[in-house]
Length: 324
Length: 259
Image 1: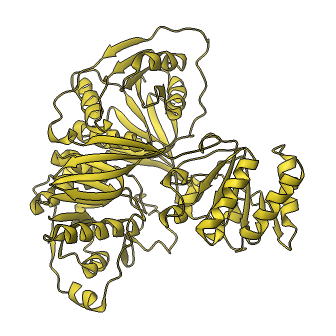
Image 2 (image 1 turned 90 degrees about the vertical axis):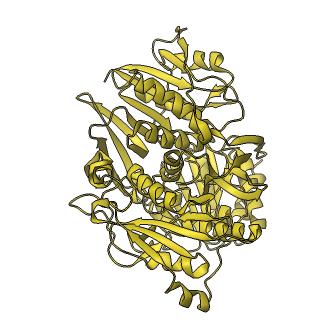
Image 3 (image 1 turned 180 degrees about the vertical axis):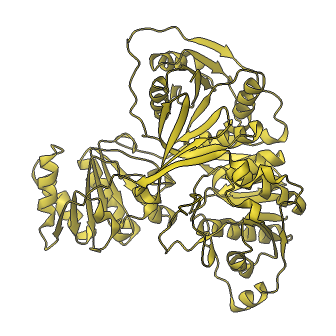
């Protein structure tokens, strides 16, 4: 394994959490770790990336209001076809990351492995782990004759740790060209909206309180928010109630939403559909409150309460308040 | 305003999924249904055509066998025709191989807009629609939660991890639609009857002018090394609420020093 590239998506001028996770993993593969980034603040980002083991940062530059997919994929593909060919490219499974992976795959005519939850290097090859069927089955796969291997990795698959020894590392920043992207690059972002949030971010909170259909009505989601606040945690939701329009998508936990690994996960009125469980089953402890004794969520809960969440949660809230 | 919607026909999600032990592909026996996550693309296509006041919704699908049961569901709600690419050489196709087939089929239709789900329910790879866009040389907007078209320009609310973006995009383009963004209509009895006679054009890989080495197991260039049961998370204590279960939850949180 000579060279691994990690795609470094930025959030407000710093690398997204998944990027540091991927850098930590890539350091263990026994090759040089390099990064491809884009956006207005590459210099400050590069310092952080260096701390996590990046030796070189390829900078696509500021892409303005374009969606990243076409330009970033074209810039990487142009490096590869010009002979600067890493053994693998690790891409975080974010919305932009998936777009970039898809377009890069076509530009290089190479397959892509997605939903990766682990990567192992041995004998100069990388193999990837995929958690399927709601986490009940672990599938291990590898590319055959496809270099660079394109891996799209789920958040929280690795724990981010700075490189040892600590201290300032010099990181070489190399600007790379974006070739002509034609009509593929015609979409433009004209406005950005962020959901208002008080308390910790959902995917970083030590406590997550999540609500589902069993809450009965949209108004009862206030119980989830209140309990989360009392526990200094973040509220989350099953896909069912996001699809039903009760709460915004930013709260969705699961395959098509966020992956969380809190110390405690409290599932209220969530039955535990496969698509939900893959996003939370790595929590250290799971508490589930659900009316249906047969709900799948009880098969993974450390404490299961068979009961109506709309009755148990208000009493829990009162009991916590009474302790203060 | 002509819209092509990518539709995947998948095993009934009420049945437990399984892998074929010989080649590690998903078992696809029995009747296939339309992936529910594609029903939102179909509905959005129908609505956009209605607003535009003209045009039609066509379906594009790929399957190793000649299954049409899932397509008939979408035809019954108002799509006018379908292309089904069906060929034994497609078995084992990965997302890129699938995208090559769909892009070639879409090129025959020449639509203004392609709609697809963000990912399928059975395989959830999640790259195929944007791969189709790149193959066609078109722009794409993924994770759309609201789509409008005015003066030939798409206006999309695109979900992000933290909220959403407003994105404009010229046509033709590929848009992926998240679940739940529109309320899929139910087919009427008349629609179901009419769907039986709507045209489903069945094509092979050769008909599309694709090299068989680009699709199926040969094109996938990836292999499964092992499949094993994941370390199971054991079920813990169960209490039935008799009005005081919140006290046990409180005690549990105290044990964990959350309180």
